[in-house]
Image (cartoon, rainbow, N blue to C red; front, side):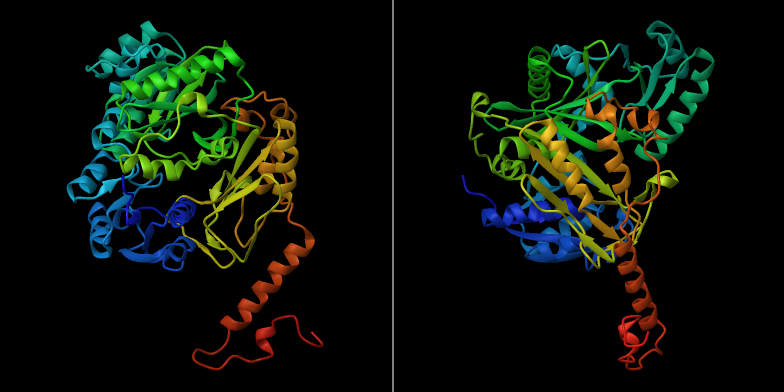
Length: 496
C-alpha cells in the first residue's frame, strides 16, 4: 500500500524533530507547525515546510484543532502525526482529522475515548482477564456512594479522576476522616483540567514499580508486544529515567506481563503503536494502570534494544500495511536507559527554567543517542513542557549501559538555563539505583542524597559569562547605531 506524500507534524520540540527525520528517511515530505514563540525553533528548520498557528498560548496554537487542520489544508498534507502531549490522545482531534479527509497516524477517535475513560478502561480490562486493582468504578460516583465503597476497599486508597491523566486530581487517602476533603479537591482539579469531575477509587499500592508494555497492532488483526520498559524514576507522576529490560522481572513474570499487554490491546481493538501501563506491587503482582494511545516519550529505549523504528512503523500501520514481522521474530539485545534533560531547577522544586540556551553540546560515542529539541541559541519558552532532550544509551548489559550513561551525562553541556543534569548523574550513581532497587517514590525518598550544587566546569561558567558580557555590550548600543567594533568583542580584546 502506498505511503503518504506529506505529513503535518502537529507538535513541537524534540518529538517533532524526531518524526521529521524518520519521514525524510522514508521519502515523505513534512510540514512543521509553530506558534509565535517557536518561530525560530529547531523543529521548524527540520521540516520541509512550516506553517504558523498563532499566539504562544497552547490553547490558541498547538491545541487549536481548527488552526492545525487549516495548516494541513494550506500545505496539501494527506496525514497528521500528533507526536505526544497536546492533542495526541484527543478522540475529537483524531475524528476531525479523519472528517477532513486526512489520515490520523494513531488509533481512531473511538479508541482514544474508550481508553481515556478510566472507568470504562477498568471494566474493559477486567472483562479481558487483565488484572486491575481492587476499587470502585461504578456509574454512581456521588460522595455518599464513594464513602461507602471506600470502606469496602480499605485504606490506603487512591482517588482518581475518571478522565485525564498526568496525575492531575489524584489524591492518596490513608484514613476515613481524610476522604471528604480529598474528594472535594480531586473533583475541583478534575473539573478544571478535564471538564469532568467524575471519580473512581482504587486500592493504593505503597512503593510500586511502574512498568509498561509497548504494543503494535495493524488493521488486519495482528498484535505484537515489543517488550517492556521500567519507568519508576518519576516525580509528580512525570517520568524522568526509563530503561529496558526491567531489572525487576525474571522470565516467567515478564512473559505474564507481556501477554497481559497484548490482551489489553486486543480488548481495546487497538491499531497502531500504543503502551499499556502497569503497577508492579512489592509482592510481585502487577495491575493494569492505563493505556496511552500514542507514542511514548521513552520509546527510544525500545528502539535501541530492538533496532526498530517505531515512528516508521506507526506511519506504515496508519497507511494500512501489515506488521512486517511476527512476535517470535522480534528480538531484544542489550540494555538501554533514557534520561530526560529538562530546563528545570532541581534545587528549587523542579521549577521550570525558561530562557535562551547559550550553548548546548551533546555527547557522542558507541551506543549513545540524543533526541534534542534545542541547540545553541534556542529559546526555551515559558508556555510549554520544559523537556530539552533525551539522552539514550545502549550497553551489552546494565552495568556497561550505566558506565556509558555516566560518561555521556558528564559530556553533556547546556548553558544559559538551569537543567536537571546534576540530579540525573546523582540518580544513576545512587547505590540503590545501581542495584535496581527502585520504585515510584525513589526521588522523594532519597531527595537529600540527590541534592547539591551545580557541577558545571569552571571553563564552561567562564564561557557563559563571556557570552553574557558580549550580549550586554551589544544590547547597550544606541538603537540603530552601528555597533562599536571593539565593544562587540566583549571582554576578549587587547588590554582588557
